[in-house]
Amino acid sequence: MEFDHILIRYGEMALKGKNRKKFYSKLQDNLRNLLAAFPEVKVKRTQGRMFVQLHGQDPNPVMDICKEVFGIQSLSLAIKVANDDQQIKDAALYALKNSVETKTFKISVKRIDKSFPIRSQEFNREVGAYLLVNSNGYTVDVHQPDLDMKIEIRTEATYITSEVIKGAGGFPVGTSGKSLLLLSGGIDSPVAGYLAMKRGVAIEAVHFHSPPFTSERAKQKVLDLASELTNYGPSIKLHIVPFTKLQQLVFQHMPDRYSMTIMRRMMLRVSEEICKKESILSMTTGESLGQVASQTMESMNCINEVTNYPVIRPLITMDKLDIIDISRKISTYDISIRPFEDCCTIFVPKAPKTKPKREKVSYFESTINFDDLIQEAVEETEVIKITKESQEEQYEDLF
Ligand code: ATP
Ligand code: MG
Image (cartoon, rainbow, N blue to C red):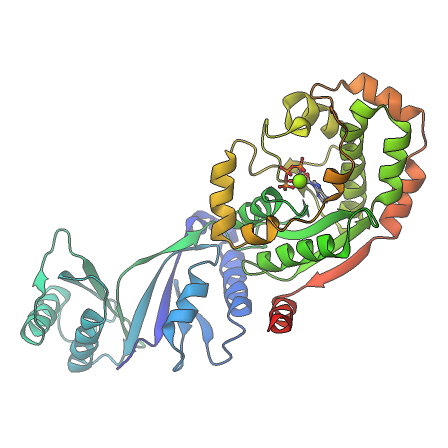
């Protein structure tokens, strides 16, 4: 006897009426992709239920992955048996003995297949009595049990589920369209990407790279961050924009105190061009209100002027410490704190303007032709596909 299934319960998406089918098949696809390292594991859908069939695979590593998949509200290990009362009782006994930190339990039978001869209430009592007789140290508590064991007798088979484990919540990645994540090497932007993905957004990423001022190792950091994000969704198309010429033009010709604001505006302009090319409808950044000079209300007002594409800022009201907690949880923190320079840290003015004005910025920018260099940067952008496999290859290189 062993747990041979994981039962998947849907989250918020169960509410989404017409779109429901699309959501379920996306979740199924995403689960399949994220579980690709276990070829024997299958993801199946029956009426109103999704199951991961383990086919002999150890449930623990599979469960660990499933717990992080967006769109799942909760999960339970389950045993599938024939609709036979003795087999059901034995499976229930196994599930009880293998559940963690359980002293009290309750049995909840749901008899969907009415041809099963024993009625739910009666079978509840029969199974409960069987477990008490054949085990030690457990008692029944119908009000607040440690384990509420569900026995679902369906036409094709009976499923016995163990404890309910919380899932990642959110929507399946890809059900809320796509956004272009501005991915720096810092702590915030990968967390922003993760939170957007949690809301069902698929991600492409753009990174502004300024060689020789920023090194190959700084670029590698961004590849590694993008790679971590593939743990939560499909492969990520990463656009690496050569930013040196634009940055130099800004820093040579724009007033020092405005250079940071103008550089940010260039980033959004290039990003919008990439969005158009890739049919992406929004951008996502790791900005958090008041964190640095570019993230004051005035700066955001000024920077945002150059695009009317929606800019999603999942971290806008979050404190740094809360952002760090998430970055630790999603394993991006250790990569983000590697001490390599970013294009924004190289060209920082000594005293960037914290309250820039739109009129002034527009005036300064009108004195120089930036458009050609923006086009050139877009044309010379390098595209790298980041997949889960590329992550594994990198790890192999380490050993
Ligand atoms: P992060 O930790 O994400 O770098 P930060 O607090 O350092 O953020 P800034 O450096 O002001 O803040 O950047 C704000 C946002 O602008 C970032 O979260 C990111 O979305 C975007 N950004 C900054 N630098 C780059 C870059 N080199 N390439 C792509 N996006 C960038
Ligand atoms: Mg930064």
